[in-house]
Structure formats: structure tokens, C-alpha cells
Length: 549
Ligand code: G6Q
Image 1 (cartoon, rainbow, N blue to C red):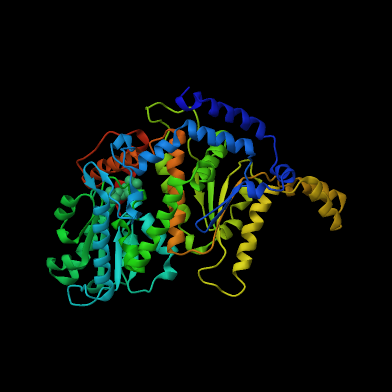
Image 2: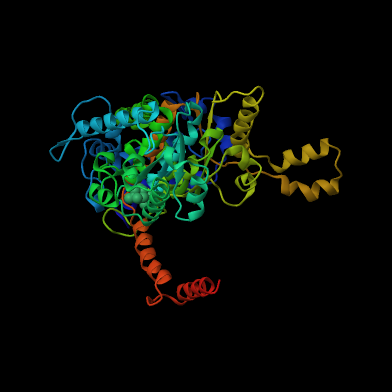
């Protein structure tokens, strides 16, 4: 047994889950008229309804007891005060400091992080203004019209998701593009319509060693120099965001064009740092600050609220309940706002890279499932595709439904149709339709008994499928900042509950190393490394076709 499974509260929840598996939410709703009030929360413009989970007051009480047994409040304090809670990399975890504009000093290892953050924000502000007002000019004296962010993973997904979500707030001073894939098709497609004289590149890489990003950056530099016929043009068209100034400078980026980031900011939590530069360029610095402020409001809520009233804590406890105790293996993220179309891809990285691990803080293999796989799509599109599985498959997939009262782009007659679906789906997933109802319905429609007997079993929806509803007023920089922060703190909380090191990513590092080794084999005839039979044959086939085509 591991430390977690030895806890009395954990064991109690295991037994309680066995009993709850026989319950149906329809009965729980019927027995309690106050169920919504009991299991919902309003914070900073977010309404969080978690009443459509297979829970009772006892379940929640037991989960809060478990959180206290796991010393969640103490871990929360450690994060906010800069203790080195990223154990395997021996680093503090302080993305919350990036959005704290209070100016009160935060001293970590003798350095005042608040000062560092504020001066980095000033640098972002000054640069953003120069580009957006046309003071920053390209090599031929033209103003910048297009910005291409080159980066991958944490140096791409956050800024791109936010740019997409807030594109209706852009004044189109500049057009922002993203290149993350080393497949040359992507950079070729992005660069084709662009004018090198008016294009600015941001090379975003915390380590400045990531092969995909370095390869794309080199291609971008060649593209620029082929037009400018002068390497001096690079200084006017390339900036970098990196914690590795030395590598960025060696690569050819001028020191004054490098924006700092720090080892206490994890890649997947970095959009609040200069990694968010494309967001500031697209929307203007003020809106970037609103995004940070929205996140800070939720940071304060998470830091100061008791566990029972704490939205991210409850989100994490429900995920633990549904997955670790009730056995669901995946979770769907289903935004109904079109602007949030990249949210599930973003959260997939945030949650799965953070907690998709099977060894605890002490290096022991855990004896419980950790986090579910995260997947999803825009809800309406999903309804006409995979919702069949959500309603009637054997696997229960808990889902987060995320929607807004107002559309960012109101078009007569659309939003109520969208939201009618939003509400209908969680109702159907919870309530289902039993066989008696199906038979009565078919009978009322005048179907024959034979038809009813054949079809009825196929039309039964068992329901009892857990969903959370997050209802916002509207997508805007502040609310989006808050929404992301809610999930970040959910992820932190899950890590503490599961005793998982949430802030490293050794699984990502392994792939990076292996690819570098194989790349030598693909590009040099005399290099051949030992591999398993399958990998050797695949490489052989690739090289053979390539050599003969
Ligand atoms: C995020 C991960 C990973 C990382 C990318 C890019 O938390 O560490 O997704 O962001 O591998 O790394 P660089 O920013 O160092 O290029």
C-alpha cells in the first residue's frame, strides 16, 4: 500500500464508492430539492454546477477530509510562497507570481521575483507599443504587419489557444500566426502569403534547444535573409523568449531582443510570461493585463477560500472521485463557445503532461489510477459525432460543459439554439430514458408491438453520466484568464491528492533524446544504431524509399 491508500479517508471513499455505484442521480435529485444549491458555486463571474455528479453530502464531506489528510492547504501555501515543490527538477512553481500585480515583494532565493516580473512586463509593454504603433520597422523601413510565433508544446499551445479565443478583441494591428510542427508543410503554408519586409518572428523556447523549434527558426531566418540579402536584417525581424540567453544569442538573436523567462515557470503554465508576447501584440498590452488580472482573481480565490467553497479544489476532488474511485478512464472537455475551440487541446497538455504519471513523490509505483485521458471538441460538433458514445457506450466519460450567457459575436437567433443544446445534453446525460418511457413513447406514436420489442432496448439511455457545468457571462480577456487559472489550480490540487510530481515531464524528455539519435541515421548513411526489429525495419523502409524516389 502507498501512503495515500493507507489513509482512512481514502479507504472510506473506496467503500463509499462501492455503495454509490448502485445509486442513480435521478433518485438523488428526487430526494433533495436543494441539490443545485448544495452542489453549485458562484465565483468571479463563473457559475459552477456540479450537482450532476454521482455524489451526496457524505461524498463531498469525505473528499474534503481526504484533501485535509493530504495537507492540501499546506501545499497550496508552499506553492504561493515559492518553495521548491517541483521536486525532481528542484524548482519553485510560481506561475501565480506572473499575474500578481500587487507589487508586494516575493523573495525567493534572495531575488525579488515581483521586480523581475514587473520589469519583464514593462519590456513586453514597450515592445508591443513599438510594433503596434509602427515605430518598430522592418529592414526596408516598412511597418510590421505579421507576427509568426515559432515554438511548440508549452511555447505554443497557450498563446495560440488564447489568440484564437480572443480574436474578436483584436484590432488587427498585426496578424498573428503560429508554427509548431517541424513538418515543413506548416511553415511553408504560413510563410507563403507573407512579406519578409513586414514579418516579425518570435522564437519561443524556454530551453532554446528544442529541435523542432530550432529547425523552424533556421528556416525562417533563411527565408528572411534570402529577401534582405543582409544578415543585419535579422535584428529587425527576430526576437526570442527564452530562459537560455546564451543559446538564443549564439543562434543569432540580439541580446536586446531576448525576453526573459525563468526556471520557476513551467512551459505549460507560461502563457502569462513573455511566452504570451503574441497575445499582447495581437490584442494590445492592456488586454494582456486583463487576462493576467482575471487569472489573479482566481489565484486569490484558490489561495484564500476554504476548501468547501473553493472551485478548483472541488473540480479536482470530483475528478479524483470519478476517475480514481468510480473508475472512469477519460474525461471530455466540451466548450460550447466557438472561441474556445482549442481549449481541450490546451487542457489535454496541461493535465496529462502534469499528472499523467504512475510514480509518486517517493518514487513508488502508485496503486491507484491517476488522471484520466483528456479529450474533447466544440460541444455542438461533438453532439453530431461522438456524443453517441457519451450517451450509450459501456464507458462512463465524465464531462465538463463550458458555455457563456452571451456570445462574443451575437447573431440573431443563434445563441439560444446553442445554449438549448448545452442545457439539454447535461440533462439527458444525467437523466437518461428508461425502457418503460421508451415503450410508452413508441406506443403513443402508434408503433406495432413487434417494432417496439425490437427497437426499445436500443433506445434506452441509462443516464447517470456525470457532468460539470461551467457557465460564464461572456468570453473576454478577464474571464478567459480566470477559466485557465481554474484548471491550473485543479491540476495542482490533483497532483497533491495523488502525490504526483505535477511539474516535471520526463516522458517528453525521453522522446526528445531518442529522435535526435534516429535523425543521425536518417541523414547519414554510415550511422546505424541498434533498435528493436520493428523500429529497424521501419527506418530501413523509409531510407530505401527515400533513396529511390
Ligand atoms: C511543457 C513542456 C513542453 C515544452 C516544449 C517546448 O510544460 O515542458 O511542452 O514546453 O517541449 O520546450 P521549449 O520551450 O524549451 O522549446
